[in-house]
Image (cartoon, rainbow, N blue to C red; front, side, top):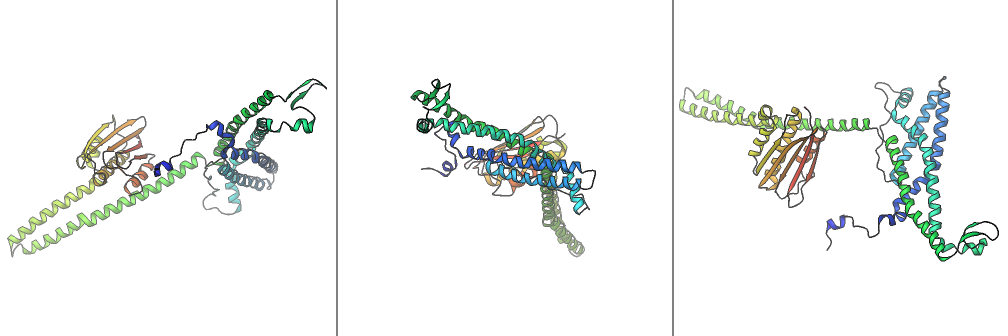
Length: 439
């Protein structure tokens, strides 16, 4: 009986890929991309060259600027169309580039035209329309020639009869006069022509695939978002995650103070006030109340220490990750082995994130995994800090069933780190965290 995992897993195909290639949908989509690309590239090139040359020639007058802006705007429209073609025909997922942004406190048509002319995206789109034209023509010629040769030659035995019936010659070939020449009309010659066509038929899809790979690179490099813009977008997203995390931590601290230490201190003040009133009337009762207040002070101090440890533990500041992680492991319900191989200490921010990552993972082990043993390994590899946590629990950990692992993933992503989770049902669970090393 087939299981769900068997159905989801792709099954190996019995026919080799080199034999399937001429008949696969991917091959024909790529062929369609090349065939439609050539006439479109001619239109793009003519438009770009016309607007660029006209706008540049008229720059001595005011008319050149809006003509150049109109040309760049049209090139951006070309980019949208080419990205759509790449998504449909080349199965290329590409993000939209950054839009035109005017300077702050400036609006109006001229501000927008200036932003369009300053935009590197606009000029990269113009460069695409110019560079893509010769490549599209070359790809079109190579692809059409190979396909128009491969299929007729591969099927030659099926239509060879056309030559003697309608063309008055034995078959495909060439003539050297009335009597001399060579024609493929014998069985072995028919087979040789068909074999040549079949070889071309098998090679052509891979040639087309190589040609469209250049198209993919051009679309990604010239029509997609720049690496700098992508990085800025990631940093903006990470900054939002960091702000949300900090706000959540502040709310947690406020809640813990309000519900814990603050409530105990209020009760302590009331008890001490009552004890003061009874000090002369009933000294023994006052002494008992002072004793109870002393116990409340101890509990409040313990809660404040736990809260301070949750903000930034003193042992981490004073002694580093090794002793701090060992202290965390001592409070875990499982038997935890800690191995820390660090010659120097990373930046305080990285130490803090590593500490709280291990704290969250050990809490998950204590609460959810029912593990008996666990292991923590921490080491440095070049400019990265690697954390490896394993346990023998029942597994099933993921970022969708709770907020803990999802929050860790966001916190690590905010500092260019990552979190990899391998926790099949039944265990064991292996979680690897990678952070940048910053001295």
